[in-house]
Structures are given as structure tokens and as C-alpha cells.
Image (cartoon, rainbow, N blue to C red; front, side, top):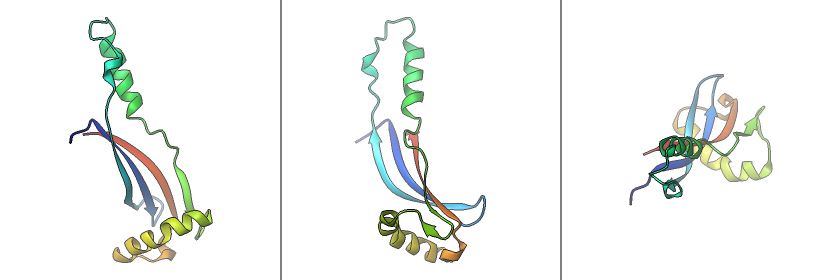
Length: 110
């Protein structure tokens, strides 16, 4: 079944200042609700473009969940530690290489 866009929840795992790899946590299908505008309106195209731009703008602010060699909350550690550990080990890294982990949201059209 098709969709218009995806909303992704991702962990960015930094192992140096600008180098990171990502783990996709969740992928949600999104559908435009463009029937709220009438095609016969003079500014239909402008309204539609603004709506699409707004819809594709991430709504979640980035969340720092790991910094200074520890998770910021115990719940984050319980939730993500095992999963992150598997990935960093498979990529020949150690916890000592990890500088920070940030949870972000990305949105993109299909």
C-alpha cells in the first residue's frame, strides 16, 4: 500500500565530532490530506506547497540520550543500550568510541 511520505525515528550514534552512523527505530507511513483545499481557489498551489512543506518538517526536537559516557536517563539506557551495543560491536567500535547519541526525526517524500 502506497503512501506520500515517511516519518522516521532514528538514533544518530557519534563516534567522533562529525562522524556518526544511524539506527532506524521506527518508520511510519504518512498521507497528505490535500482535500482540505479546493483546486479552484486562486492560491491553491501556494496553499498546497505550504501544507506539504509543513507536513515534511520534523515535529520532534532532537533528544540527546547519551553524552559524557553515560545515558541521560535510566529509561533510555534500558530501552537502547542492548540495541546500540550490537550495532557498535558489529561496526568494530566500543562504547569508549561513542561520544554522543541523539534521537532525531526525519521526514521524506516517497
